[in-house]
Length: 173
Length: 177
Image (tube, rainbow over all chains, first blue to last red; front, side, top):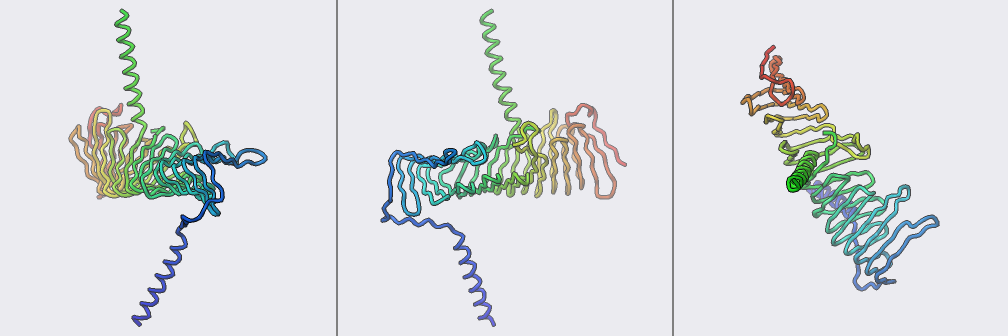
């Protein structure tokens, strides 16, 4: 009876750990893979018939099969329905489809209202969700946010952080 | 004459900078907490764990703080605090024009537009200027009128007038119904 319970518990733990493993985003980088294309001091534009949707500027850009690596990079993303732009800037970036992994002097500006500075960040250009577990500084409108373990949903303006130090402007008080 | 004018301009400049800084400082609320969450759609900000909120000399310490927000009258795209609910070992210090109030309680509500505080559960209020101390289950403080109402445990409401710096609070009186 006791052995059965033990096996049930073991089975449950195995299932849970499998599910948890699936949720993790793993970026696999093989050092021996050679880039298909390399650019130096380049500016790339994503142009439609109506306008320029995205601009990517970098001192070094390496395009691989499934990812792009950028050095001293700047991505300017134009919003479709608005005149606002989102700006992503970092010393080093790995871009896999819409997911961008940023490292060193990370600067994220969203919707002309959020200004985030940190050293490392995971960011999705489409969902505007930014995550990290290190210290960050953020200005939203005229309020200041500092802390670590940031979760920011830029579209829904939903922010979660730990060890927070916040300075909020009170207009009507 | 020219020297005096120069002095006057310099003093005016210094005064402008100082008053500008004071005004700017007054409009900011500083909050420290172990955990923080803000949801603009739900118009709420939540702070948990060793929460410390300060505004100028005013201070509130608690374990949990919820701030409901609303669109600003000046700019509807921005959110401003509508009301505050502090819970868990709440203690506070409020600096009025000519007084300092110290309080404690299980839960403290603050309505900034009405400038009203409500202390609920193990309420304690100390008027440092008059040296008066109140202990009650519920304490209502109105900063505008300088009036405090106290509800005791034994269905005996007690009214207590405190000197908070309002216009019509010349004397400290105590009434028991």
